[in-house]
Length: 409
Image 1: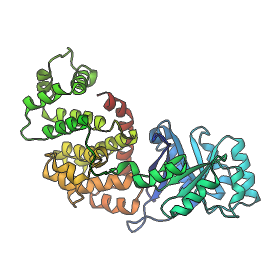
Image 2: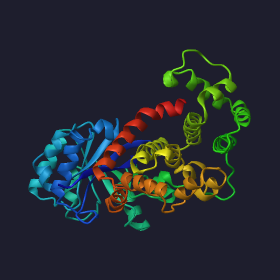
Image 3: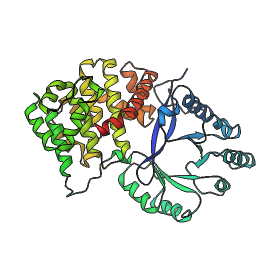
Image 4: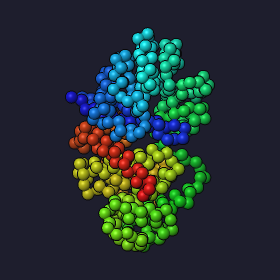
């Protein structure tokens, strides 16, 4: 029986807040490759797993879940198993707008579901569906600038809203935003916006300096104390963390020197890195912080299972630092050159084929739903995709629970 797991892709509004996630069916193939299974089976599996194995609340939190629906599942109203206030029915571009399909769309709208048309091409065959559609998804990867402009002009101030999908760069996002698109799907937020001559804000320089000191060996507690004292937010974060229930202290602390001594090197590196990453991401979409946390937790959980039990902290920092280029708006190689992480973490971040590097590549493939890459990587670690999916789901839950703590930490 094929292993089924879900990939998810974020969808943002114009304020770069996450509006929802598209849930993607992925199935193991027989030769370690993605198998294009029957569309009805794929969509049914996504719905089934969203209800049972991986409940929506764990996958998308309080956001919308975009789920691909075939003709058969539309007509049979299989989508009705999902809550109408949480699910967006995404009708595949292959569905023809005949009388039976149009009647099914009327039923769907009467049930108060949001209807999105995937890869909308604005042909005479699909235009009848416009009477029922709420969102039109425009593929930015295959459409040129003129085509993107055409949709923006035609549907400006119309009832339907435009969603730009496969938005992978800041330039794509900027173009879609200027054209008036309402929603944006893709991983543009994980890419640095590099502008020559831009100065790094002073508070980011302070936090980067903090990360540098954290990763020196041996750790210089005196220097760390000086940096913490010079950045008021760090002082507040540290004392709040130590006075919380997180580490089980039975008395309150007011001394930074005593606080650092009590934490010790390992816990200090982990807490402080989380605090620094959350601060560096204050001017970025919150999803970037969530991505950092998910990757960090996944790498941390996976390390002991693939013979790297002695590198758990390195694995955690690897996932956490994998978005440093986007956080600092600088090439990753330049940022990493300033942080004295271990050579193993540095080489993994640079994409080298190492044990830690393969862990990072696996989580990147899973978060994009790229089974063609994920399955061979997992097999090379003697790991099933079912096991990897469990770890990914646990990481989603941990990040969702921990993101507010990280922002406050």
